[in-house]
Image 1: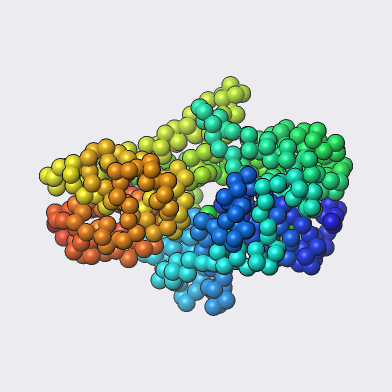
Image 2 (image 1 turned 30 degrees about the vertical axis):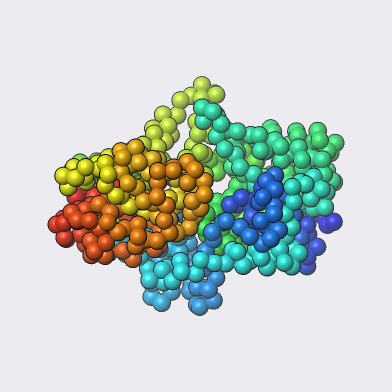
Length: 524
């Protein structure tokens, strides 16, 4: 056991590289497991704590359902990481072989005196990047086989053997959009039973303001008999990674940390200094907790604005992406891309602020309105499909519809809060024959939930004979599709409904194939 509290950053990093630091990561989800793996790769002895025995069994076998993408080969090949970030994703841009592009969304970027402007085209290098769907599996196998990472259901015992404890459990919404603290409370109780003097606890989860000091701290003190700040350190450091790029963003995205005292904040910063990303210490855990909610609420509200502008553009016959690109040339304007909003964070985190505001007697109408807009986008997508069938003069009932993408975002297998799922349900309810394709998502749960849906990994078979193609996730595999390829596979006349801005609508020139994208007029 080593002491982290009071160490310099250089000393803590040296101890980690020398294999003298033990870390317990409580919660092995999309944040916890990549984080545990990366700390183990740096030299730490890591215990992964998880209540689900199946997850523990999988991790100890070196297996995971999490999909992550490696960008290290680009850096090894001479690519340069720029300080500029993608205006859509917030990820640092890459420059390689005379291309500047976002490693997340793949869009080519132009840099000028006014900042970053995204182009409608995607980088060829990005396509190569996505073909190397790495690496996380091999990295996990490496640290497990080396004995650097062990998963367990016994959190208390793992904590007793650790110098630092990272809490990365989920914080879902309960009834009436009220945050559920039960996983945080359960994890804190288990940690308290194994807590020892000089331990450091860092809360990574997204939580209500005041949770670190108002919920976690008293549980730890009561359960351990120790005094926070004197006997152990406690800090909140929210995670900002973009799922699918955790391996890269853990090392590059700036972090904020708020400690119960200066020593706790500095200890947390020293622990994470093993990664090269800059770390900013803020005044208290409540500031870091609130800042994290601001980040996702801003993003959700921005997308809601883009979605509402897209619907307006459909009515007035203007291409929304052309208008957004033009508007974003003004450095004061930063509109994101319209589309379906899903995943674990954006549909949930704004309600944390809403619940607190309502509890204090204030109604945050803008945040709630933004949520209503984004939650209504699956219904709007189905309306676009109905419009297309109306133009074609074909009944939806009995027609084959190819739904491309079930995960909430491209190049991920994560189905949580995916906007594609309510779209699929509504189309099945309209008695269409719906075929759903996804290269990464697990079909097991959905097959029970949606028995009338046809699930397929075969893209050509999914497209064959379809009257309408609906793009609901921007997987890289779909970016290579061209209108002539679709026309060859589909029943014509047919239609394409693009909810993810995959296609350039101007490429649709065949009058037998209608294009109706979110925020676009009909083409041709």
